[in-house]
Image (cartoon, rainbow, N blue to C red):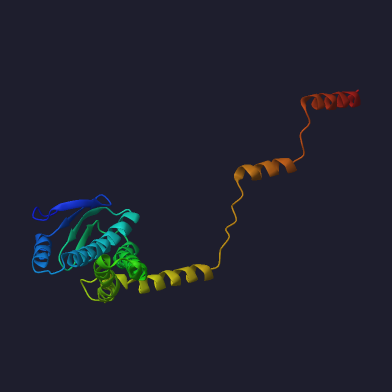
Length: 222
C-alpha cells in the first residue's frame, strides 16, 4: 500500500516504509519555537515519537513473524497506523494486536532502568533524561492501558479476543483427549490368504514321483 506523498519516508522497518505526517513536523517546530529548554523539549518529543514508532513496529514484527506482508507504518501526532496484509486466521489477528503493547512494555522496562541510572548523571543530562523517563514510563503505561480498552478502533477490541480463542482451543484439546482411540485392524490381503491356503494343501509330487507310481501299477498288473 503506497504512502501519501505529503508524508515523507524517513526510514524503513521490516521492509516497510515509515512515514511521518506533515503535522508532526509542524508540532515539533512550534514546540521548539516556544521552548525555554530546547534540549529537554526535543528529548521529550523524540521519546514520544519513538514510543509511537515502537508500538507500530511491534505490530509489524508480529505480522512478519506470522508471514504477513507489512505495507507501511504511518506516524501521526497522537497515534500511528500499521498497514499489513489481512490476517488469515483469528490467532494471527489477535497476535498482531498484542504486538504493539508488547513493544511498549519493552520501553517501559527501559524507562525503569534509566530512572535508576539518572541520579548518577551530570546535571545537564538529568533534565533531558527525566523527560524520556516520563514519556516511556508513566505516560507509556497509561497509553497502553487506554489502548487495551475493548473499544474500536483501539487494539483492545481485537486483543481481548484471545480469551474466547484460548478457551475454544482448550475445549478442543479436552474433547480430543477424551475421545477413545479406535484401532482399525487391517484386512488380510488376498495374496497372504492365498499363500496360507496353498501352504495348507498337501504338496503334489513331482514328475519323477508320478513315474514311480506308474511303474508300481504296471508291476501289479503283471
